[in-house]
Image (cartoon, rainbow, N blue to C red; front, side, top):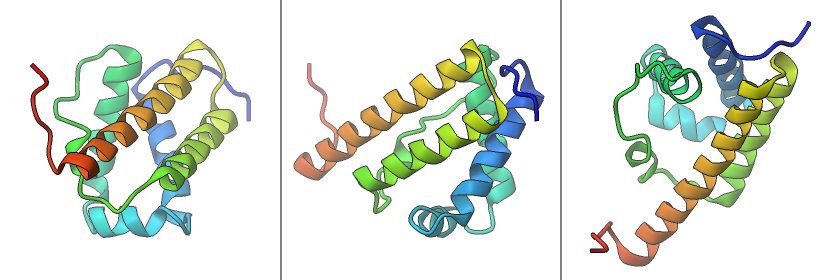
Length: 131
């Protein structure tokens, strides 16, 4: 398969669908996603299409707070590492170019940010304003 960059919604859907195929088959994170999503996969995938379309293509189709659904999950560094491995594998398999590179960088930053927020919740029990 010839790899090209991420250009449009069709590319976003390919990225998301192939990524979540890997996730669902993964022994470490697959069960966590399945427990959280249950039979709502079409709804979750649709939300992920709009999320990545907004992040990568500046289409502003997503609205929501992506961290909070993760706040209650039993996840740690090893889960984020696997998530990133599968995301990178998907990008490496299907895409090549500056938008794909941006997707990789943004996913890595998201993983760091989510882990920091989860650690804060663990340490403090909730979020508190810092001002």
